[in-house]
Image (cartoon, rainbow, N blue to C red; front, side, top):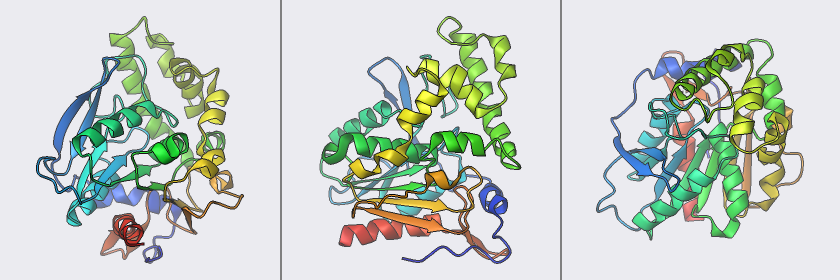
Length: 323
């Protein structure tokens, strides 16, 4: 495995975090889109790298779960799917509810421990592709969600191997961290998107939402959003209850699937609380780089920057498949 080495002059955590958006302003390919109706009357939008028809049964399928307010247009998302297609694999990303560009039909949305949609999607996918190995990647929030899924399903999981990138395994500490220093810029960016989507949903489903339209503008932090919106919409007592019950750090010992965790020590979204302190089971590979920022990991050089994740993620899966 090739270790991560930041590009010369690009060790700064914020440069690492922000550069992918400037390196890749447009998606690498146009996906095949599909809408999957859910049992509760809502929908999940999928983005495929290629048609599912006639895909060989012995080839793996890369399943991707994106981060908070992410979508196929997120640089890491289309980049990892493209990297999978370059290997000859079929790739598919499940947009969380409300993240594909269209507000979902129901009041509920998604969160860092919400595994029912992923479970439904993976079970549906297994019916379409009964014999293919499924390799899953979860990024940031999607990574913590995937940890929850693997811990819940263990040997009944539809996933044969998984990797999680920059997962906020301690939600409370990450919520506090993003309120400090320059990280508040990231918080504001995410909040702007979340509040915009929340306002749209309130306009369509005013009676079902926990807030009125005029209250949205007063939300100043991700913690407040989770306290006032995420928690009541999804059955939690409050934000602290949500963070406690859905943080993946305490669930790693229950996972039996081969899993790789990728963190950067300088991640501006996180603290040392996301780093496991107890010995991990043999099926978990833990990769902690000194640098890399949040879902950044830009290597190469100023003139020719490269996104290391798009190389190392396929390498690890291939290694696991051969072992």
